[in-house]
Image (tube, rainbow, N blue to C red; front, side):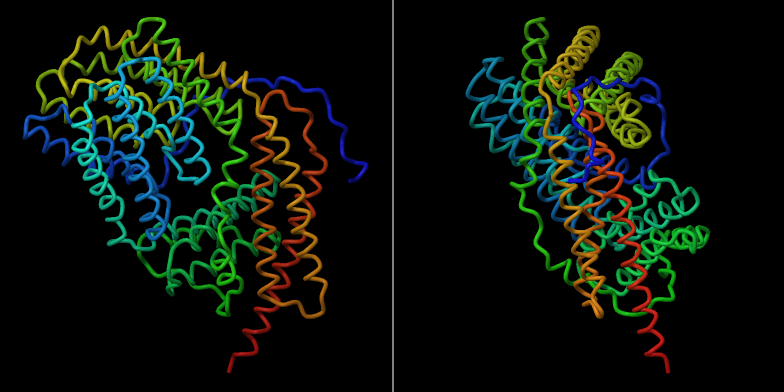
Length: 546
């Protein structure tokens, strides 16, 4: 490689941030949708159990109902598949927990099984990129179920409740498609246009990377949306305009990009563009097979080890302290693990602050919840809504509602002494956060640097292939478009790999010069390709005019 590549430096410890960890961000464009969906999914099963006098079964229906939290950013064709897999994954994990609980009462065995389930759920959620809330909800349900008294004869009935509630959650998640069938694709396209407008205005490398990632996400959304309807083809052309602006920011008008983004709200017609020619490469990309799951699991091995070891140690530490619900410490540890150690630290701070504030909120509302079973259900529903409405602004703010909700769920089988619940939750939060973060420090992730090397090589190959096609006198347009898309995807992956490795401890010096050079030459090649395609489209359009 080039002599400009810096020599590896000794491993070093990176600083852990405190500034900004608790800063509130802007709410999501659709913050109210997951909040309303979870209420619509949880309320009917819980109110039915309330009417039947069987609130003790609510934990099993909650397992299925909470699946409504997932896949709100996906087009409805992809959402249908994702939600179905989430429901099956939830019921499968619940089955393992309930069968284990019915076969043994050994707390040590139950913690070990919970830690292994947490690790499996973490890597599967990350590998499939299922999105928020990720593995945390799955781990919460399966870990709590391990410590619920159970017999083998009860397991089928409890799983049936979870599956029925999961089916209802699937219906709730898909229902908005009847009103706004192209909503997710329109939002993804609008985000790409706004991110590109920000890059045109600012022109810095960070905004360029954000715009490239948003464009890539928009293409992924459109390609997973199903049939190529006229609306989706019009959205395709808007994403192409974002790509053109990314390639030639000086010649682009950010106000026009933002105006197109605004016009995508609601169900109105998609704003037209000058380009009415054929969009190349979409059919080829649709035919490209997805990366096998096993290949995506390999790089996540260190994360799986962190999760398994951290959750097990947190659970055992809680047992050693005599806490009656060690799964709280286990779930706290499972919730910490992010793409790197720095992000894990930030999540740990957010989790502790949010849980401690949530415990205080629980102490304030518990007299109201103890007025009766109906009050308990209604207060839980309010916290369900609050958690999803607030968590997008910062994880700690959502945790302020999640914590009292989790505490109240334990009371569905009968009211408990609040002081003991509060004490155990505080202890388990601190134990889970400290032990979980300690495991993240001990279990290093040296593969993060290897991922950069692999991605750099992929970027360089893709750039060279695209440049060769571009140098041909008459390059095949479909092949060139496919090569350009591949290069764009590899550049986005490279930036994600660098960001992840930059926050990891015990890493040598990163190949920053090679990364900067690869990104600069890659984006120049992308710009040249986009300009070539623009010339071809313009020529084609002129040729077909009467």
